Length: 214
Image (tube, rainbow, N blue to C red; front, side):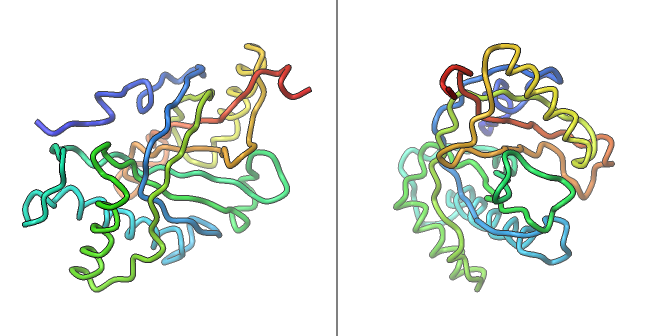
């Protein structure tokens, strides 16, 4: 049976609908950086998703070809994730989607080294006749966070974020968006097949002890 990160690491992918604190270890990702409204038809964000999955499935299906990756095990491709921010503000303003900066990501299995990632980019470029030069190998060390499961439209997220911030402050923590730590979303639903009111999204914010901000 294929290894499923969502099932094996439920603490990261299937939190409850109430905020909780969690420490997230460093993970490696396929990543594409960009700017702009994610809802723009044929925009940069939607194009980035195609690039991510092109590399993800090149790695997953390597077992069918001549290239052998040391330590390979069969697995379910992990869900799409995103880091989001806007210049000049803490957190994000959902009314200014055109000002979004983002990194779209898919988690890599532990056996994928930077060398194997480079092979996958070269192989995908050759097979699909597509430019994958925007795709990068990214290590993201998130650390201490508050997270929550949000069920519903993306535009309803601010209320959940507010409850997360209130919970964190009640525990003696404050948001910490320094050093590249960002508003983080993990998409558990296929937006093409799921009604907006049923969308499942993990929302995660890095935090630090309140006395560290003095």
